[in-house]
Length: 428
Image (cartoon, rainbow, N blue to C red; front, side, top):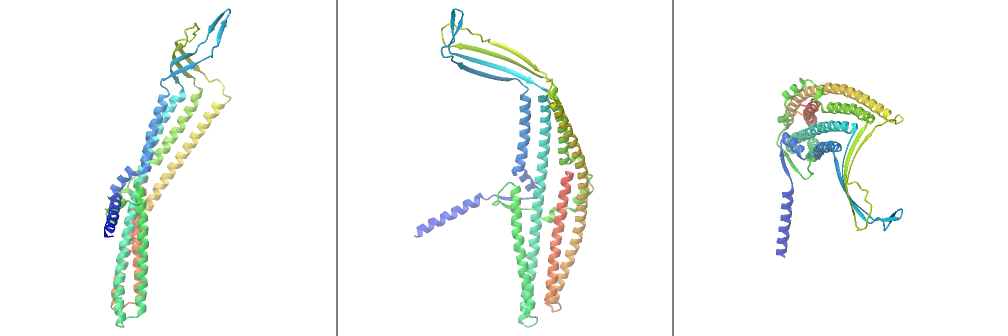
């Protein structure tokens, strides 16, 4: 029985060890997290694949204008049929034909299509850069949110520790009859409320880590450790420098995509107009025919044949004209969209600058408020221990301190996120 228990214990131990080895552990700075996401995020991988697809599509269009060669092998059997020519009969025995055909076809639509493929490549490349920017921005936002939540947890745990010490002091005071039991009960409720707040924060923190793992292209089992603090990443000088940076519209990826889309709409007019242009084709064919019989027969298959074709569009009952008009209207709509987007981006630039300025001012205010609230709480706590303050005052000052801490962390996170948003718009 002991032997069976030993084997079972070893089996469980090995299973746990293997599971631990399979768990991916990552120690990441913000820069490391962004770089890791660019290498493993599937949206980034898809954007890269789209660029490769655009190159493949261009080559497909170019290849359609190059010579096309095909080979064929045919077998025919007329089941004993004979051709009668006057008094003479000629057999039609089974035969096989081998042929090789080389052809080329050119049209205006193909040439313009190749130019459109070049635009598609440029748009795919811009979209890949935009995806890269989106991913790094999302990683930074989640990374900083985790740090803010961890800082909140640390502050709550420090408050909990202070309240627990105060609660112990109050219980001792109750035992000697200095304060009433209700004073201790009030602080006890505050301790429980603080503990519940910590539990909620930790659960929210776990969800943020899962979101970061998703951005990194990993599963929820991935163990992530952040190596930087919120204070390290909070750089006031960078914030002020960004506010002084001018908005260069041409650097914005959304604007670049719309510019290319407008150019694409313009070239589609040309492509549609190419339907008026003649198309040219040429081919060469080699054929060799073999009859599977010794009887005399008639072979009319020419071994070599060359052909040229020219197709000129003459009348389409207005189909081509309407098609060109449709593309012109689409181009006009694209121009309107470009102008609206340009104006919207300039408005967004002003709004994001306002947001960052307001967030910076709020951060300064909340920093001072936190300092004052902490000193007030410490002062009232000392007075309570000396019997000069009530438990209600302690509770109120504790709530005020908690609110100040929460506002401080929120203001810090708001400023960092406002910085990320403006940085993304300016493509810095």
